[in-house]
Amino acid sequence: MDEDDIYNIVHAGMAGIMIKPVFILWVIALCMARRRSDPARTGFTWAKVFMPMVGLAFTFDLISDTFYVVRSTYSYYRYTSSRRVIYEISVRTGLIGSLLERVSTILLIITLVTLGNGFMYARDHKPAMYQKILFFASLGAGVVLLALTLAIFGKLNATYGPYLDYIYGNGVSQSFSSAFLVTRQLGAAFEILVWIITLPLIAYGGIVVHFHRANPFIRNTAGLYLTATILFFVRQLYAMISSAIFSIGLGIAPMYYPVIDGIFNIWMLFIIVVLLFTMGIRKHKGLWTTQQPWSGAAPPTMAPAPQGYVYGQTSTPVYGGITYQQYGQPALAPGQQPYQAQPQMPVYSYAPPQAQQASPPYSASNVTNSTPPVWTPEYWAQANGQRPQHEMKA
Image 1: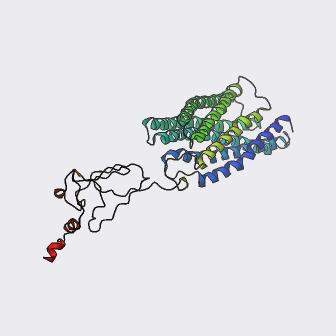
Image 2 (image 1 turned 45 degrees about the horizontal axis):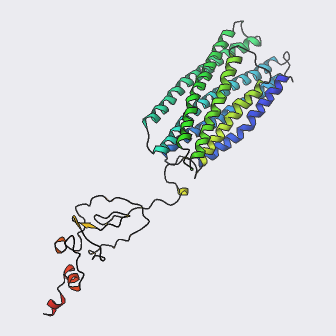
Image 3 (image 1 turned 120 degrees about the horizontal axis):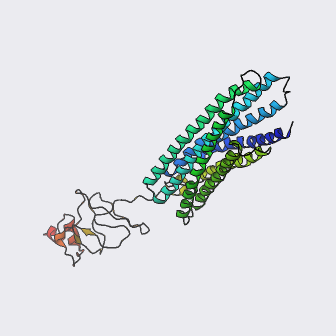
């Protein structure tokens, strides 16, 4: 076992120890990081598609590294057929792992854009046109990047078959350098485009933190969002530089390159998964814009007020356009319930009454604007349709 195999074992271990935590976080997120009909939490739906893709990418990386190390234990001359099969499994699974990593990168772009829109929706409580533009722009960029991803995957798979046949003596001699150079250039184009996209994502994260800096409930979660965009930028900066140096041919990758890739690619992607998971499961200080069971009692429902009454004010009631002084509780119509004032209610305005509103217990012709009614027994009897006692005796 040479030094190259040791570094590949380290890379396999760095990917393998992250597989189980990623899938555990994904299962918990399916149960706890739910949208609950909140339009601001659409990004967490994309995040729950992104997480298992990362776990699958790590799994195929582990398989590829494992078979690569196993291949080195076979003698080059004695076990040619077995060595070729093992090496081909390592190559094919590695290509699938690269495909899934690029797909997860595309999903991460859409996730971060949608989460940023959710934070801005939490500020305005209404969707804006620029949010739709950003979302569809991320989808358009995702389509372009997916086309590049499929082109790279297809070209490499088509090239590696004849290449392995030629290496193990079953194929014809031909030049494979041009085919591999095309795939490297496509890969470099992918990494450069993604790095360019991360620049406005960081700016969007800064805008989100700026607008929520005075909100104690969402400020910390907005900071996590900005941190995720910065880590995404750093990861893509590494991917762009390594692709330009090692893939295009400007330099030779050192033997310890798998360890560097494990830190800046695998572990940094796992940290982003943890940040998205933390933002998604938060309740009291999370991204919520709708009433939830843990956020307290539901807002009080306002009962219909008498005609002309305004909640929270002490002005006199108005009936039929005439103002009356409140010297006592007026008589109630049959079936009408007395109104209980709630002094701690917020101020709400009452809409104009409908046509079938109950009439006041006394008519405007008996009372003037300046003189309040005299509440005598005779007046109460007349108001209730009874004759005065002296007329009844007569």
